[in-house]
Amino acid sequence: MTVKYGKFELPTSIKIEKVDEAGNFCRVIAEPLEASFGHTLGNALRRILLSSLEAPAIISLHLEGASHEYTAVDGIIEDVTRIVLNLKTALLRYLPTDTETGSRAVKIIRTTVDISHDQIEKAGGQYAVTMGELFKDSHFEVVNPDEPIFTVTKPMQKKVTLKVGHGRGYVPSEKLNITNKVAGEIPIDAIYSPVRLVNYFVEDCRVGGQTDMDRLVLEITTDGRITPQEALGFSTQIAAHHFSIFNQENFQAIMYEEEYDEAENATDSILNKLTLKISEIELSVRSTNCLAMANIDTIAELVVMPESEMLKFRNFGKKSLNEIKDKLEEMGLHLGMDLGRYAISQENVKEKIKEYMNK
Image (cartoon, rainbow, N blue to C red; front, side, top):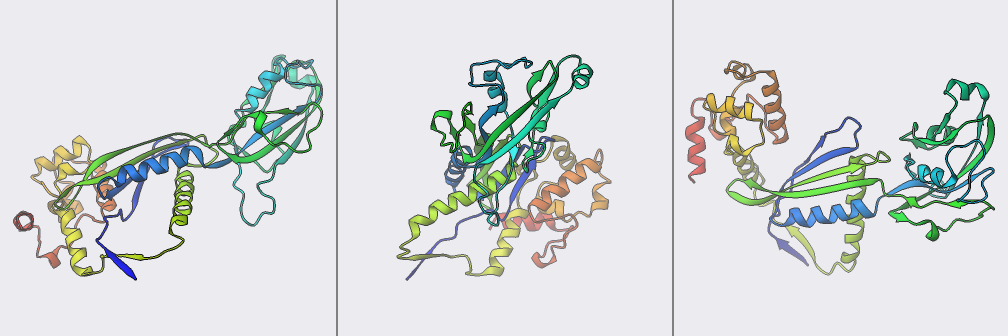
């Protein structure tokens, strides 16, 4: 038996804003959501983003000439403890796929650091071996290849062996399960989580006459091993995967009352957007003031305006025009719309919108 539930307001799409040039931060805006669902979804996604995403990390080091962590190596300024700390900063990108056999198994990276006298002289007597040099022949993408690992002061050849694991969260060195360990191999705390910071907050949102809807704003910062968009996609699928186990019995299915009158529903949806006040959408102060001076109060009055006419307004430039076009596009609207099907024209728009709002 199928149980019919009332309609839930859901966002038709989400808006993703990239803020930094590196692409490690983004702001995600989802609206409208039913009251309280902003916190329900925001808190769940935040916890999954911070705890459950996977990425590669170095889990052990074997450096020729170093028998244990608390020693020094001739010709290298840093002691092994400092080298281990530097290796913890490694940001390795690798997304294993279902077509690769053993893609999540521990990878062994063997490198010979061969530093000549000329290289040391050219570097002013101190040659810095970087993260990129240690992984130059691996299939990992190094996000921070210029990160210095140790500094060489005399010509040398040293074999460096690194083991890279794939996991989630943070695993201290004493809890790592490293197989086939060799003498002198040093375990390293594994910092798998690629997400550095997640904030979310919920704002009020209006849909037609309903003013208690939620707008969810989610801010995600990663370290570069995955993008914020990938982090959001992975966490959403992890949440769905876990929620599905609670519906295994599926005693009664739910259908949502959304198909009662698709045409009428679409009309109401458009008219709800058209009746919004300009002050209710997020425009810059300059654009808002320009529209106020042009006596444009609602979205309907705005969308019936052709683009060429907008540019005639005082102090209204291309920057403001592009901002308004982007905002309307997010709402599924555009400038110069033909609203004849709703009996709305540029001449009667104020009167018709007032009639609809008074119904």
